[in-house]
Image 1 (tube, one colour):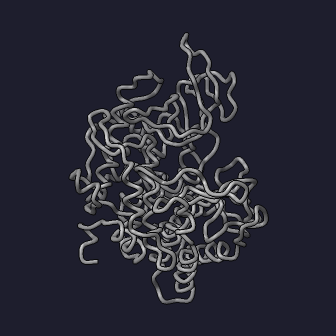
Image 2: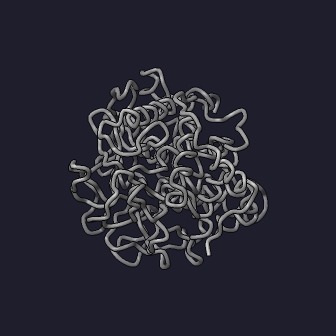
Image 3: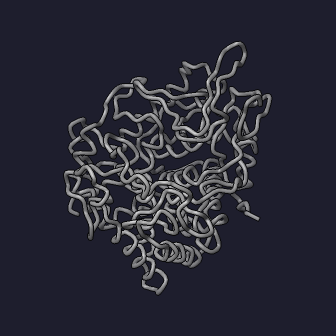
Length: 479
């Protein structure tokens, strides 16, 4: 059975949840990520969230392939991105004492060796990837391509980011940690980035053996900064520096709820690359021209979403100062129904979000949106974590922390295709998602200690990729 962490943090959490109902709303967000001190109750809450989320990866990895499920408890394939988040979580767990360093190293090395052993090739079946890239979803037990899913450059990049974190975190001279560094290097070195530049210098989103390369490339600000940085940093098959200019030339700037920033509606686009790369104080040509950095840009995006929730133009139930956050998540159904005399359109799984000229909102909130913004908006995110766990209790916050999503507006089960409905509190997902849990673990740790950022600053491939993209300043100076 998956286990719930038992420690003093859990006891303090219980006290906190009873006491925090009257916690006043906090409207100001501090741009700094690392707190000088955190109140005991908040520290206990964050440790509980972080440790529960960590155990999603630790408990649920397949015992043979070490792959991480896309979701649980619903049986599912593995998400290769979730494996990257898991590789990051293992080091965090060692640092926090959730497991020993030796246990984390053993699990990390076994995972990397399992990935390296998976067959690569052009065949549509019986393989796990091609040219060093992996398919988006793999069968949990065999490690082979799931159905007709695509070879994914973004999901492979999230996997590689986790592997490179492990490479830099496990820096000791013993046999296991030395082997981890070598395995991570081999996994990264074999990726043939120029192969995915079918419309060079852009990088394609993916490929399938049935239809060839995707017709879309990574262009304009989104979650794919990590793709281009890793492609630029490769010591074996790098892309040319022009890939970064090609990626950024389609950026859209605008103002949403008083915040001027690069636009991307779902918050995951403002979070994923930031899990591993500390963008504070470093700038490329784009951010230099606007007098900010990408960290500040993400802070503004989170503030704008919070302001949107306060305004609540769709008049959805529950939205407010401490209940906010739109990103990719599950939903109850793809249908339009009438609630309280008003027609409401709901979605299933969708990339929800809100920004200038792009709003996709059906009243479904995903806790990872606010929780994983904690480095950008610490007070607002802490208030949201407190309130969501307190108000909805085990309907939303349970064995592995926060479930994927909830919708307070939908109080009828008519037409609902997934999840469960409480006639008073609304619709709740029944699954935890790996791509939620990973950013929650890593961003809470970055807020508490900066561990992932500090570790990745030491990685020569990340440094090389950033410098070839034209980043300078801050911690990059002199590198």
